[in-house]
Length: 409
Image (tube, rainbow, N blue to C red; front, side, top):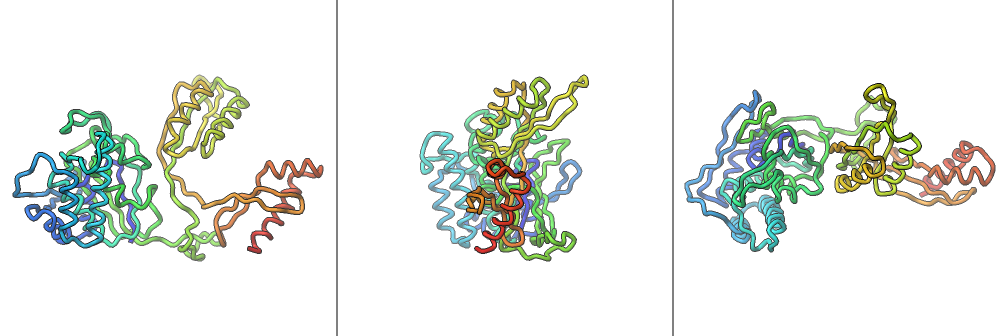
Protein backbone atom coordinates (compact mmCIF):
# COMPACT_ATOMS: atom_id res chain seq x y z
CA UNK A 1 0.00 0.00 0.00
CA UNK A 2 1.32 3.46 -0.94
CA UNK A 3 -0.08 6.85 -0.04
CA UNK A 4 -0.10 10.47 -1.17
CA UNK A 5 -0.53 13.27 1.37
CA UNK A 6 -2.07 16.40 -0.19
CA UNK A 7 -0.99 19.45 1.83
CA UNK A 8 -2.42 22.10 -0.49
CA UNK A 9 -4.05 23.83 2.52
CA UNK A 10 -1.23 23.05 4.93
CA UNK A 11 -0.80 20.29 7.48
CA UNK A 12 -1.18 19.99 11.23
CA UNK A 13 -1.21 17.08 13.64
CA UNK A 14 -4.98 16.88 13.88
CA UNK A 15 -5.50 17.14 10.09
CA UNK A 16 -2.92 14.40 9.45
CA UNK A 17 -4.44 12.11 12.07
CA UNK A 18 -8.01 12.72 10.89
CA UNK A 19 -7.05 12.01 7.27
CA UNK A 20 -5.45 8.70 8.32
CA UNK A 21 -8.56 7.61 10.25
CA UNK A 22 -10.90 8.72 7.46
CA UNK A 23 -8.78 6.71 4.99
CA UNK A 24 -9.32 3.54 7.02
CA UNK A 25 -6.97 3.53 10.00
CA UNK A 26 -8.57 2.04 13.10
CA UNK A 27 -9.67 4.60 15.68
CA UNK A 28 -9.42 1.84 18.29
CA UNK A 29 -5.78 1.19 17.34
CA UNK A 30 -5.07 4.92 17.64
CA UNK A 31 -6.73 5.18 21.07
CA UNK A 32 -4.93 2.08 22.35
CA UNK A 33 -1.57 3.64 21.46
CA UNK A 34 -2.52 7.05 22.87
CA UNK A 35 -3.79 5.50 26.12
CA UNK A 36 -0.42 3.78 26.66
CA UNK A 37 1.32 7.18 26.63
CA UNK A 38 -1.45 9.33 28.12
CA UNK A 39 -4.13 7.26 29.93
CA UNK A 40 -6.18 10.39 30.56
CA UNK A 41 -6.56 11.19 26.84
CA UNK A 42 -9.11 9.91 24.32
CA UNK A 43 -9.23 10.71 20.60
CA UNK A 44 -12.77 11.50 19.40
CA UNK A 45 -13.90 12.01 15.81
CA UNK A 46 -16.71 14.06 14.26
CA UNK A 47 -17.92 14.56 10.71
CA UNK A 48 -17.77 18.26 9.70
CA UNK A 49 -18.03 20.48 6.64
CA UNK A 50 -15.17 22.66 5.42
CA UNK A 51 -16.21 24.97 2.54
CA UNK A 52 -18.78 22.40 1.46
CA UNK A 53 -16.49 19.36 1.69
CA UNK A 54 -17.24 16.60 4.20
CA UNK A 55 -14.21 15.73 6.29
CA UNK A 56 -13.30 14.05 9.55
CA UNK A 57 -12.29 16.15 12.54
CA UNK A 58 -10.41 14.82 15.57
CA UNK A 59 -10.56 16.15 19.12
CA UNK A 60 -8.47 14.98 22.06
CA UNK A 61 -10.45 14.88 25.32
CA UNK A 62 -8.38 14.82 28.50
CA UNK A 63 -9.28 14.69 32.19
CA UNK A 64 -5.84 15.77 33.37
CA UNK A 65 -4.73 19.32 34.12
CA UNK A 66 -2.30 20.56 31.51
CA UNK A 67 1.20 21.67 32.65
CA UNK A 68 2.45 24.98 31.24
CA UNK A 69 5.09 23.12 29.25
CA UNK A 70 6.81 19.76 28.91
CA UNK A 71 10.50 19.11 28.32
CA UNK A 72 11.76 17.02 25.45
CA UNK A 73 13.48 14.75 27.97
CA UNK A 74 10.22 14.01 29.80
CA UNK A 75 8.32 13.33 26.57
CA UNK A 76 11.10 11.04 25.32
CA UNK A 77 11.13 9.08 28.56
CA UNK A 78 7.34 8.76 28.57
CA UNK A 79 7.14 7.48 25.00
CA UNK A 80 10.18 5.25 25.37
CA UNK A 81 8.86 3.56 28.50
CA UNK A 82 5.21 3.33 27.44
CA UNK A 83 5.30 -0.14 25.93
CA UNK A 84 4.23 0.91 22.46
CA UNK A 85 4.79 -1.36 19.48
CA UNK A 86 8.39 -0.72 18.29
CA UNK A 87 7.35 0.75 14.94
CA UNK A 88 4.90 3.15 16.61
CA UNK A 89 7.38 4.11 19.33
CA UNK A 90 10.20 4.75 16.83
CA UNK A 91 8.00 6.82 14.51
CA UNK A 92 6.67 8.94 17.38
CA UNK A 93 10.17 9.51 18.78
CA UNK A 94 11.44 10.43 15.31
CA UNK A 95 8.83 13.19 15.00
CA UNK A 96 9.51 14.58 18.47
CA UNK A 97 13.27 14.41 17.91
CA UNK A 98 12.88 16.59 14.82
CA UNK A 99 10.74 19.02 16.83
CA UNK A 100 13.28 19.19 19.65
CA UNK A 101 16.18 19.77 17.26
CA UNK A 102 14.29 22.55 15.45
CA UNK A 103 13.27 24.28 18.70
CA UNK A 104 16.85 24.02 19.97
CA UNK A 105 18.14 25.74 16.81
CA UNK A 106 15.53 28.48 17.14
CA UNK A 107 16.40 29.22 20.78
CA UNK A 108 20.14 28.57 20.62
CA UNK A 109 20.18 25.70 23.10
CA UNK A 110 20.53 21.92 23.22
CA UNK A 111 17.58 19.59 22.44
CA UNK A 112 17.72 18.18 25.99
CA UNK A 113 16.97 21.65 27.35
CA UNK A 114 13.99 22.35 25.10
CA UNK A 115 10.64 23.11 26.73
CA UNK A 116 7.62 22.47 24.52
CA UNK A 117 4.65 24.79 24.95
CA UNK A 118 1.91 24.30 22.34
CA UNK A 119 3.69 21.20 21.01
CA UNK A 120 3.92 19.76 24.52
CA UNK A 121 0.16 19.85 25.04
CA UNK A 122 -1.60 16.53 25.43
CA UNK A 123 -3.45 16.91 22.11
CA UNK A 124 -0.15 17.35 20.24
CA UNK A 125 1.30 14.27 21.95
CA UNK A 126 -1.84 12.35 21.02
CA UNK A 127 -1.56 13.57 17.41
CA UNK A 128 2.07 12.45 17.09
CA UNK A 129 1.52 9.05 18.68
CA UNK A 130 -1.84 8.65 16.93
CA UNK A 131 -0.40 9.31 13.46
CA UNK A 132 2.40 6.80 14.10
CA UNK A 133 -0.17 4.19 15.15
CA UNK A 134 -2.52 5.02 12.26
CA UNK A 135 0.19 4.71 9.59
CA UNK A 136 1.29 1.40 11.09
CA UNK A 137 -2.31 0.19 11.04
CA UNK A 138 -2.69 1.20 7.38
CA UNK A 139 0.45 -0.75 6.47
CA UNK A 140 1.91 1.94 4.21
CA UNK A 141 5.24 1.10 2.60
CA UNK A 142 5.63 4.46 0.83
CA UNK A 143 4.22 7.92 1.53
CA UNK A 144 4.69 10.75 -0.96
CA UNK A 145 3.91 14.28 0.21
CA UNK A 146 2.88 17.03 -2.18
CA UNK A 147 4.14 20.65 -1.87
CA UNK A 148 3.27 22.03 1.55
CA UNK A 149 1.27 25.27 1.89
CA UNK A 150 2.62 27.14 4.92
CA UNK A 151 0.25 30.13 5.00
CA UNK A 152 1.01 33.81 5.45
CA UNK A 153 0.87 36.64 7.96
CA UNK A 154 1.60 36.07 11.65
CA UNK A 155 0.69 33.64 14.43
CA UNK A 156 0.44 34.23 18.19
CA UNK A 157 2.42 31.73 20.29
CA UNK A 158 3.79 31.38 23.82
CA UNK A 159 6.86 33.26 22.55
CA UNK A 160 4.81 36.16 21.17
CA UNK A 161 3.66 37.08 17.67
CA UNK A 162 5.76 35.27 15.05
CA UNK A 163 5.87 35.40 11.26
CA UNK A 164 4.38 32.54 9.24
CA UNK A 165 5.87 30.03 8.81
CA UNK A 166 6.92 30.02 12.45
CA UNK A 167 10.70 29.70 12.92
CA UNK A 168 10.56 26.04 14.00
CA UNK A 169 8.21 25.19 11.14
CA UNK A 170 10.55 26.79 8.60
CA UNK A 171 13.52 24.81 9.95
CA UNK A 172 11.55 21.56 9.88
CA UNK A 173 10.58 22.13 6.25
CA UNK A 174 14.10 22.69 4.96
CA UNK A 175 14.48 20.58 1.83
CA UNK A 176 10.70 20.19 1.45
CA UNK A 177 8.81 21.87 -1.45
CA UNK A 178 6.75 24.68 0.11
CA UNK A 179 4.67 27.68 -0.95
CA UNK A 180 2.39 30.20 0.76
CA UNK A 181 -0.94 28.80 -0.47
CA UNK A 182 -4.27 30.63 -0.54
CA UNK A 183 -5.31 30.11 3.09
CA UNK A 184 -4.36 33.06 5.34
CA UNK A 185 -2.71 32.61 8.73
CA UNK A 186 -0.73 29.59 9.90
CA UNK A 187 -1.56 26.76 7.50
CA UNK A 188 1.22 24.41 8.65
CA UNK A 189 2.14 23.94 12.31
CA UNK A 190 5.44 22.70 13.75
CA UNK A 191 3.77 19.40 14.66
CA UNK A 192 2.45 18.98 11.12
CA UNK A 193 5.84 19.81 9.64
CA UNK A 194 7.59 17.32 11.94
CA UNK A 195 5.11 14.58 11.03
CA UNK A 196 5.69 15.19 7.32
CA UNK A 197 9.47 15.03 7.79
CA UNK A 198 9.25 11.92 9.97
CA UNK A 199 6.90 9.88 7.77
CA UNK A 200 7.20 11.04 4.15
CA UNK A 201 9.46 8.85 2.03
CA UNK A 202 9.50 11.36 -0.82
CA UNK A 203 8.03 14.60 -2.15
CA UNK A 204 6.30 15.29 -5.43
CA UNK A 205 3.06 14.83 -7.38
CA UNK A 206 0.58 12.02 -6.95
CA UNK A 207 2.44 8.79 -7.80
CA UNK A 208 0.99 6.24 -10.22
CA UNK A 209 -1.36 4.06 -8.21
CA UNK A 210 -4.59 2.11 -8.40
CA UNK A 211 -6.59 4.30 -6.04
CA UNK A 212 -8.31 2.42 -3.21
CA UNK A 213 -9.57 5.10 -0.84
CA UNK A 214 -9.28 8.77 0.10
CA UNK A 215 -9.31 10.26 3.58
CA UNK A 216 -10.17 13.89 4.36
CA UNK A 217 -8.83 15.44 7.55
CA UNK A 218 -10.40 18.72 8.64
CA UNK A 219 -8.52 21.62 10.18
CA UNK A 220 -9.99 23.40 13.18
CA UNK A 221 -11.00 26.60 11.35
CA UNK A 222 -12.72 27.69 8.17
CA UNK A 223 -10.47 29.31 5.54
CA UNK A 224 -12.80 30.36 2.69
CA UNK A 225 -12.70 30.11 -0.25
CA UNK A 226 -10.25 27.24 0.36
CA UNK A 227 -11.45 24.08 2.14
CA UNK A 228 -9.22 23.59 5.18
CA UNK A 229 -8.78 19.87 4.50
CA UNK A 230 -5.76 17.57 4.14
CA UNK A 231 -6.24 14.56 1.86
CA UNK A 232 -4.61 11.14 2.14
CA UNK A 233 -4.96 9.01 -1.00
CA UNK A 234 -4.19 5.30 -0.64
CA UNK A 235 -3.74 2.61 -3.26
CA UNK A 236 -1.49 -0.03 -4.70
CA UNK A 237 1.42 0.94 -6.89
CA UNK A 238 0.64 0.82 -10.62
CA UNK A 239 2.97 -1.04 -12.98
CA UNK A 240 4.95 1.19 -15.36
CA UNK A 241 4.03 1.45 -19.04
CA UNK A 242 6.23 -0.43 -21.48
CA UNK A 243 8.33 1.86 -23.73
CA UNK A 244 7.77 -0.59 -26.57
CA UNK A 245 4.00 -0.73 -26.15
CA UNK A 246 2.66 2.31 -24.28
CA UNK A 247 -0.89 0.95 -24.46
CA UNK A 248 -0.03 -2.14 -22.42
CA UNK A 249 0.60 -1.21 -18.79
CA UNK A 250 3.15 -3.48 -17.14
CA UNK A 251 4.41 -5.14 -20.37
CA UNK A 252 7.98 -4.63 -19.13
CA UNK A 253 8.52 -5.30 -15.45
CA UNK A 254 10.73 -2.54 -14.10
CA UNK A 255 9.40 -2.58 -10.54
CA UNK A 256 12.85 -3.41 -9.13
CA UNK A 257 14.43 -0.51 -11.00
CA UNK A 258 11.89 2.32 -11.52
CA UNK A 259 12.72 4.33 -14.66
CA UNK A 260 11.77 7.61 -13.01
CA UNK A 261 12.47 9.07 -9.60
CA UNK A 262 10.87 12.14 -8.06
CA UNK A 263 12.80 15.16 -6.88
CA UNK A 264 11.70 18.63 -5.77
CA UNK A 265 12.72 21.57 -7.96
CA UNK A 266 11.80 25.22 -8.36
CA UNK A 267 11.12 27.05 -11.60
CA UNK A 268 12.39 30.63 -11.88
CA UNK A 269 10.82 32.69 -14.64
CA UNK A 270 10.87 36.27 -15.85
CA UNK A 271 9.74 38.12 -19.01
CA UNK A 272 12.35 40.36 -20.65
CA UNK A 273 12.14 42.70 -23.64
CA UNK A 274 15.24 44.87 -23.18
CA UNK A 275 18.01 42.28 -23.79
CA UNK A 276 18.89 40.71 -27.14
CA UNK A 277 18.60 36.97 -27.68
CA UNK A 278 22.39 36.71 -27.86
CA UNK A 279 22.71 38.62 -24.59
CA UNK A 280 20.21 36.34 -22.90
CA UNK A 281 22.07 33.29 -24.17
CA UNK A 282 25.21 34.55 -22.45
CA UNK A 283 23.27 35.23 -19.24
CA UNK A 284 21.84 31.72 -19.26
CA UNK A 285 25.30 30.23 -19.74
CA UNK A 286 26.37 32.09 -16.61
CA UNK A 287 23.34 30.80 -14.70
CA UNK A 288 24.06 27.22 -15.80
CA UNK A 289 27.70 27.59 -14.74
CA UNK A 290 26.41 28.78 -11.34
CA UNK A 291 24.56 25.52 -10.75
CA UNK A 292 21.17 25.72 -12.48
CA UNK A 293 19.74 22.36 -13.54
CA UNK A 294 18.56 23.79 -16.85
CA UNK A 295 17.84 27.17 -18.45
CA UNK A 296 16.18 28.35 -21.65
CA UNK A 297 14.46 31.28 -23.35
CA UNK A 298 11.15 31.27 -25.23
CA UNK A 299 9.97 34.00 -27.62
CA UNK A 300 7.10 36.04 -26.16
CA UNK A 301 4.86 38.88 -27.24
CA UNK A 302 5.00 41.47 -24.47
CA UNK A 303 2.63 44.32 -23.66
CA UNK A 304 2.10 46.92 -26.36
CA UNK A 305 3.14 44.30 -28.92
CA UNK A 306 6.83 44.37 -28.04
CA UNK A 307 8.77 41.20 -28.84
CA UNK A 308 10.65 39.73 -25.91
CA UNK A 309 11.50 36.43 -24.26
CA UNK A 310 10.31 34.33 -21.35
CA UNK A 311 13.44 33.23 -19.48
CA UNK A 312 13.08 30.05 -17.43
CA UNK A 313 15.58 28.50 -15.02
CA UNK A 314 15.22 25.15 -13.26
CA UNK A 315 17.01 24.77 -9.92
CA UNK A 316 17.09 22.78 -6.70
CA UNK A 317 15.07 24.54 -3.95
CA UNK A 318 18.13 25.48 -1.89
CA UNK A 319 19.58 27.41 -4.87
CA UNK A 320 16.40 29.33 -5.71
CA UNK A 321 17.19 32.66 -4.03
CA UNK A 322 20.85 32.66 -5.11
CA UNK A 323 20.07 31.93 -8.76
CA UNK A 324 17.10 34.33 -8.86
CA UNK A 325 19.41 37.07 -7.56
CA UNK A 326 22.03 36.21 -10.17
CA UNK A 327 19.41 36.19 -12.92
CA UNK A 328 18.23 39.64 -11.87
CA UNK A 329 21.79 40.98 -11.77
CA UNK A 330 22.67 39.59 -15.21
CA UNK A 331 19.49 40.61 -17.05
CA UNK A 332 18.35 43.69 -15.14
CA UNK A 333 14.86 42.24 -14.74
CA UNK A 334 12.70 43.82 -12.04
CA UNK A 335 11.24 40.54 -10.74
CA UNK A 336 11.60 36.78 -10.84
CA UNK A 337 8.70 34.38 -10.29
CA UNK A 338 9.40 31.26 -8.23
CA UNK A 339 7.17 28.18 -8.44
CA UNK A 340 7.77 24.96 -6.47
CA UNK A 341 7.24 21.76 -8.42
CA UNK A 342 8.49 18.24 -8.83
CA UNK A 343 10.23 16.65 -11.77
CA UNK A 344 10.52 12.98 -12.63
CA UNK A 345 14.04 12.12 -13.75
CA UNK A 346 15.80 9.05 -15.09
CA UNK A 347 18.84 8.06 -13.05
CA UNK A 348 21.94 8.90 -15.04
CA UNK A 349 25.73 8.87 -14.83
CA UNK A 350 28.57 10.42 -16.84
CA UNK A 351 31.29 8.22 -18.32
CA UNK A 352 34.23 8.45 -20.68
CA UNK A 353 34.37 5.85 -23.45
CA UNK A 354 37.34 5.11 -25.71
CA UNK A 355 36.38 4.88 -29.40
CA UNK A 356 38.28 4.51 -32.68
CA UNK A 357 37.99 8.29 -33.12
CA UNK A 358 39.10 9.23 -29.63
CA UNK A 359 37.76 9.37 -26.07
CA UNK A 360 34.30 10.88 -25.67
CA UNK A 361 32.12 11.80 -22.71
CA UNK A 362 28.84 9.92 -22.53
CA UNK A 363 25.76 10.44 -20.39
CA UNK A 364 24.15 7.06 -19.65
CA UNK A 365 20.57 7.06 -18.36
CA UNK A 366 18.47 4.15 -17.08
CA UNK A 367 19.08 0.44 -17.26
CA UNK A 368 17.93 -2.52 -19.31
CA UNK A 369 15.07 -1.64 -21.65
CA UNK A 370 15.23 1.96 -20.41
CA UNK A 371 18.94 2.57 -21.03
CA UNK A 372 19.89 5.49 -23.24
CA UNK A 373 23.34 6.87 -24.07
CA UNK A 374 24.02 10.38 -25.30
CA UNK A 375 27.42 11.63 -26.38
CA UNK A 376 28.43 15.16 -25.43
CA UNK A 377 27.89 17.38 -28.48
CA UNK A 378 31.13 19.30 -27.86
CA UNK A 379 33.11 16.06 -28.24
CA UNK A 380 31.24 15.19 -31.46
CA UNK A 381 31.92 18.68 -32.87
CA UNK A 382 35.62 18.56 -31.95
CA UNK A 383 36.15 15.16 -33.61
CA UNK A 384 34.20 16.29 -36.70
CA UNK A 385 36.51 19.31 -37.08
CA UNK A 386 39.60 17.18 -36.53
CA UNK A 387 38.63 14.69 -39.27
CA UNK A 388 36.92 17.24 -41.53
CA UNK A 389 33.69 15.23 -41.57
CA UNK A 390 30.08 16.14 -40.88
CA UNK A 391 28.98 16.07 -37.21
CA UNK A 392 26.03 13.83 -38.18
CA UNK A 393 28.30 11.16 -39.62
CA UNK A 394 30.65 11.33 -36.63
CA UNK A 395 27.71 11.09 -34.23
CA UNK A 396 26.34 7.93 -35.91
CA UNK A 397 29.77 6.26 -35.80
CA UNK A 398 30.37 7.15 -32.17
CA UNK A 399 26.86 6.09 -31.11
CA UNK A 400 27.33 2.64 -32.65
CA UNK A 401 30.70 2.13 -30.93
CA UNK A 402 29.41 3.38 -27.56
CA UNK A 403 26.37 1.10 -27.80
CA UNK A 404 28.61 -1.94 -28.44
CA UNK A 405 30.84 -0.95 -25.51
CA UNK A 406 27.88 -0.65 -23.14
CA UNK A 407 26.27 -3.89 -24.37
CA UNK A 408 29.49 -5.78 -23.60
CA UNK A 409 29.35 -4.86 -19.90
